[in-house]
Length: 94
Image (cartoon, rainbow, N blue to C red; front, side):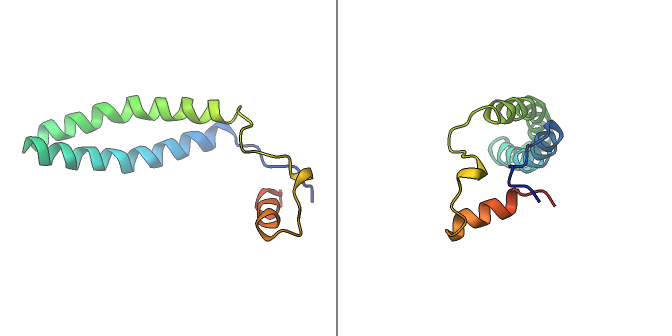
């Protein structure tokens, strides 16, 4: 067992983007239907925005994976602290 952090592969970001977009698109379609009263227009709005926002989320996620803000190497984590120990436990490879 190592203390090195797990690295997210691009496929993880893609799956997260898909699941988030399904949630967001349902919300957009419902709100569009509420405002327009037209389900066809609401669906068109929802389906159009799903692709653009999915691409933007994926790119946003990949950029943030390159930013070290708020991350520390697990070698610097105090495992006597409960929160830090949980972080180490969750980032260790099986």
